[in-house]
Image (tube, rainbow over all chains, first blue to last red; front, top):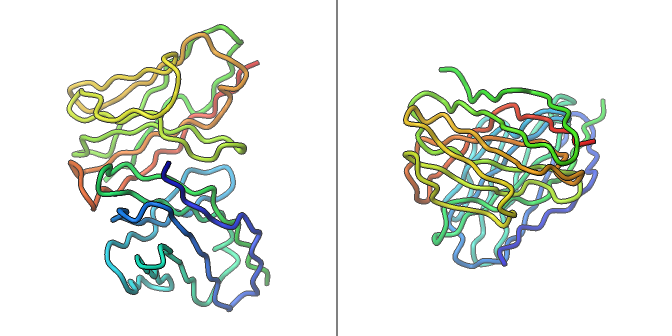
Length: 111
Length: 115
């Protein structure tokens, strides 16, 4: 059973701070990792994908992957109230390209 | 480029009825997947279609079925609705055939309420 674990939160950070969201996965064969943002009442929106160990930066977002430790994280720099949402981690193994989703972490950025 | 579209956006059905949901993928995307999202279970995979063929299937009963047309549009059908089928049904499309860069883009979803 492939499992993707996230702390449900809520994670509360002040505006302007760095928000750190973490995700662990059980399948060592996992090769593709995705972060989605989901606002309340809306559908998930792909914000980052990462496939190799290390960091990948896109604007205020940085995805970090450590396959040896089986975790992937998302850092949001200069957090804004508009970043308040649920962040879903999704992981796909080489055996199946269909990702398994975590339950999501709720992020609250307060002014 | 237009995003994934789903119709209808909201549905209210009675237990025992059946329902059909529709999804039009992003232009050029040939892979379409369906997910069910509930507060209790999160986002769960139903099935995936590519070139009118079901390639992958999740762990849902046979009451859940789908199909894909030659223009890549897809429908999913739920027969004999149960109260537990109340959920947000999401369609996602991908331009990638398969492999490690299989990125999915979601539609707005159909909110199904079964009474």
